[in-house]
Image 1: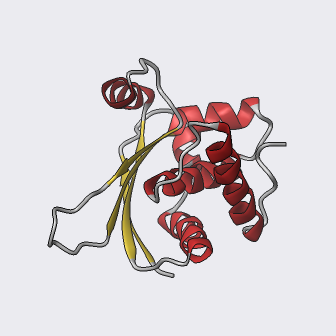
Image 2 (image 1 turned 90 degrees about the vertical axis):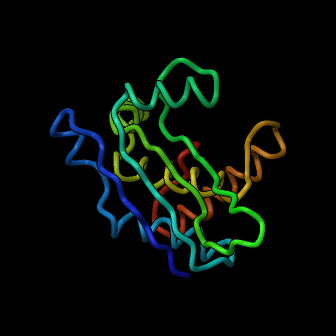
Length: 155
């Protein structure tokens, strides 16, 4: 199960927040855990770490919500007849992740792992719009995080 990660570090704020951004190798571990769980391989993912301004702008433009958010997922759909293994892009807001981890009394690295896995599942077509979809997606997140030794984030 091999993920290729294009990591884009666009966050230039608080040094403590910047230092908590996961390494490309950690991201690869988390994405590969999803790929293994889902039985897929050899896909590329772009993961971009941003500030609240960029997150808010993208969230407003693409979701109609005028506030920063933890992770945004942008699935890639290749034109017909063009085989490419790009799964899509994740945009992760570093200050939101750090703030949420503190508010939820979680290790910031565990919250990054959760939000990365959550975003990858979105790229794979999972959603949480209705209760049944949310339960399925959350169960997958819990299972995948457990393989990484990370506790249930919903407790």
